[in-house]
Image 1 (cartoon, helix red, strand yellow):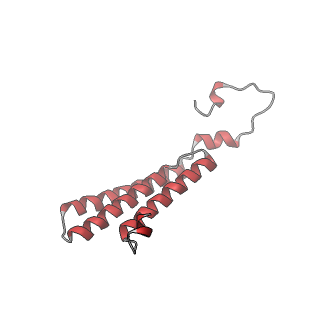
Image 2 (cartoon, helix red, strand yellow):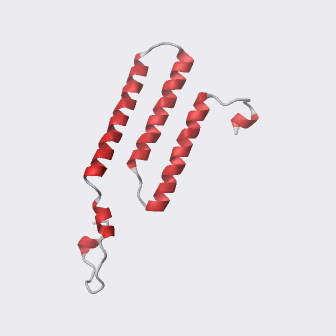
Image 3 (spheres, one colour):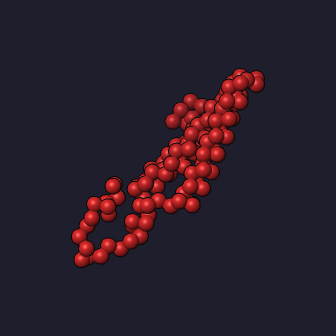
Length: 118
């Protein structure tokens, strides 16, 4: 609300903060639709937060520093972790998806191994 009342313009920090809020809202929406918390979206939020930190650091200091290298290295590591998560979820699908794909037979009593939390 500060943007609308005090400031007459939105800065890059404010726009990137808006992206963080949108990503968190999308993550909550996906959770309520599927009852699963996607790890990828948490990594996306972390990348956006680090990008916001990097841009504000460059904007205020106007000098090259080792902190900027560390932040960009962290963004690179998070981007690589997204690739690993995507590769793993593509090649090794979740067991819970397979359990939901099975149709239980009505004559068979439920077994402990059929429980999702087991």
